[in-house]
Length: 257
Ligand SMILES: NC(=O)c1ccc[n+]([C@@H]2O[C@H](COP(=O)([O-])OP(=O)(O)OC[C@H]3O[C@@H](n4cnc5c(N)ncnc54)[C@H](O)[C@@H]3O)[C@@H](O)[C@H]2O)c1
Image 1 (cartoon, rainbow, N blue to C red):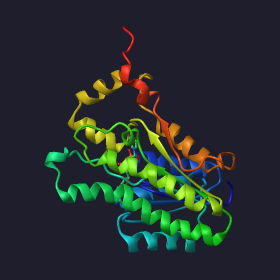
Image 2: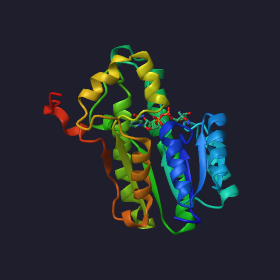
Image 3: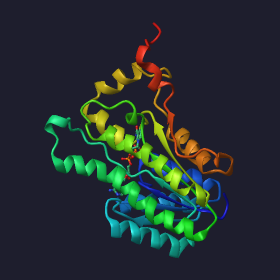
Image 4: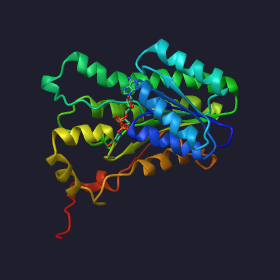
């Protein structure tokens, strides 16, 4: 992976920042792209202080011009794009009966429209370079197990898996593999915000996890890196759960302790 360049949208977040750091340890130059410029700069500074090559890029993933500018900036400052990880996302509480059209659009835009815009811009660059690449879209177990009271989150995450399949078909000819990863719950600023509002929710959920803990950001990051490695070229167009068995837990009962 040395001499390669990755763009991580949502790179300042809990999962995104870990993904940025892991890529950097493999010698990949990292563009930390996020709406939160201050947090993105902090991630970039910490990578730099560990000897990595990195830039922070401000981006609004839902805005066509902003994404195009961000990708242009990465190419002009880091020279190329080899990998894209679309990790920008939000998780708003809104059951469908109470959801406004703006809330619906807000949720779909960050996850799905953002994926489309980033993939198109970064994909064009990769195709022009002519030596392949990898894309990973951050989906969720919610793609298959909708989350109560978060009526747009699951639909957006399910669409990302389908979109990975779509691009996997369209871009195989260019040597670009495209996959989605579907993590179970990880403790990040996004989930910390939810658990702060609903502290009992974490205990309820943990009872349903066959492995009695959340997935670690490092574990998600390692899967993302693997999907971008040469060894994973033949994995293409699929959504891969990393959930400790959660999606199989319909009949699951925790052993008495
Ligand atoms: N934490 C979990 O349990 C979990 C599980 C499965 C999937 N995911 C997904 O992983 C991704 C990252 O989640 P996280 O837990 O690290 O959350 P997070 O809130 O820590 O990070 C999300 C990042 O995305 C950025 N962002 C949000 N909207 C943006 C936009 N429009 N343009 C640019 N940047 C934007 C935020 O500024 C933030 O830095 C999300 O897509 C989330 O849905 C999270």
